Each structure stands twice: as C-alpha cells, then as structure tokens.
View 1 (cartoon, helix red, strand yellow):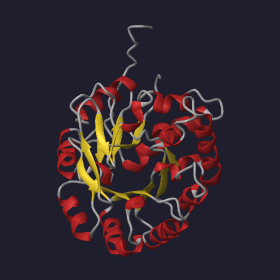
View 2 (cartoon, helix red, strand yellow; view 1 turned 135 degrees about the horizontal axis):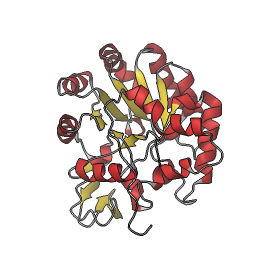
View 3 (tube, one colour; view 1 turned 120 degrees about the vertical axis):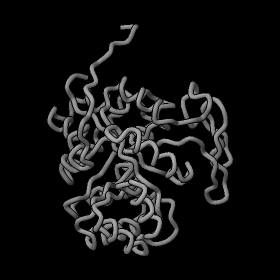
Length: 297
C-alpha cells in the first residue's frame, strides 16, 4: 500500500512463555506451539520453531507489511515480559511503544523508572475491582503515562472503567480488543470513549473474534463502521494482536481487509490505520518503508 501511515496499536512480544493462570499451565514448546491452559495449541506460526516471539522477527514482518511502528501490550497468559520489553524499548525507540505490566502503584513507579511510558492491564483477567487501583491510575495521570485496558464483557467493569476515566480526565486510555464486538457489551465499551477526551478504542484481536468468518471479515468492517457512528473515527485505532492472529492469516491481511473495504472512506481508513495512533502515542521519526513486491507477482 502506497503512502499510507500504518501503526499497529496492539501487539505482543515475548522471549518465552512460562506461567500459570487460574492454576493452568502456559508454556512454550517447539515449532510455534505452546501448552495453553493445559492444552497444546499453535500459539505462533510453525516456522517460529524456537517459540521466541522476538522484536526482530516482528520488525521483519512490519517492514514487509509497511507498518511504521507498533504498540506492544502485555497479557498475563504470556507471563511478565517487563525485562525483555525494557530492552526492546531501548533498542528500537522509534518503532515500538512498549507497555509494562503493573498492578500496583509501586510496580507502576518501578516501570516508569525503567523507562516505560505506558502500562497494560488485562482487566478481563482480574478478579478484584478496578476502583482499587485508582491511586495508581491517578499517579499515572500525573506522570503523563498511557493506560492500555482490556475489559471483561460485563457491565460491572465497564461502569468501573467509566468512573476511572471521569476521576482521571487527563489520563490517556486505550480500550483494547475493540470493546469485544462479538458480545453484548460492545457498544457500552466503545462508548467509554465518550466519557473522556483522551480515551481511544483499538481493534487488537478483531480478526480473531471474527475468525470463523475469515478474510475479508465483513462483520469486522461493520463493527468498525458502527463504532465510528457511536464515537467518531478519530477515536478508533487499528491493532493486529500479533503474533497469535497470524497463525490464521498473514500480518498484512490483519489490516488489508480495511484497506480494500468499500464501506470506509479513504480519510476514515487513514485515521483508523495510523494517524490516530500517531497522535495518541506520539510516534516520530517513522521509517520510509517502500513496497517490495513478492517474487510470485
């Protein structure tokens, strides 16, 4: 795609998965597979034989797909990757905005001291109230940090997140997984962007949610269209949920269905695919990535 700014607002990196969630094992195997919640699954494409989901492999995918930069969030199912992502941020400051994982004020302060300017919380994995973290959120607001938050598809967390947004009006918040568009909570989650001027919604995982439909994901396009009707296209950002989604599709396909849609204008596509994320995260010095044709073309 020529002369289109592309920024991925939801991706993951890890050196190794080795953790437990609710007593169930997540552990890296070989050939892109992992034990996930005690079941063997294809976590990565099979050519990633060592199970390492590295920044360098992602950069190769980004360069091929002409994606200038990416936001790296975290999930408890991958284990805490703060140490690795601190190094990634240091080595590639113009290509990545890495989020720390933190659940307490002390952890947030340590993340900030380590150079992180954002914190990702997989809220849908939490059993306690989000309001118990209000002190941390207010401190993040005072430091100009960004909060990435994925919510459970129930009204309790949505109401709590709304209260956080109102109590911390200067806190930048990115709501993840596009508000879970395949659930009844979709519109309520998206409308959180109306509760504060610095709240965005990113589409990480949208191709996974509509995986049974597959490319070109017409229902995903309809969800993007509906979200834009609710809060405006200037509050929405593309995210791929790399690398898990590219076991089913290529990285380029994770945005190509938007590029080729006839239901969105070119201006809307530009906002959604990169301009909004550049403004929100403050990316600068992005590389010029010319299109390199495939050998088979």
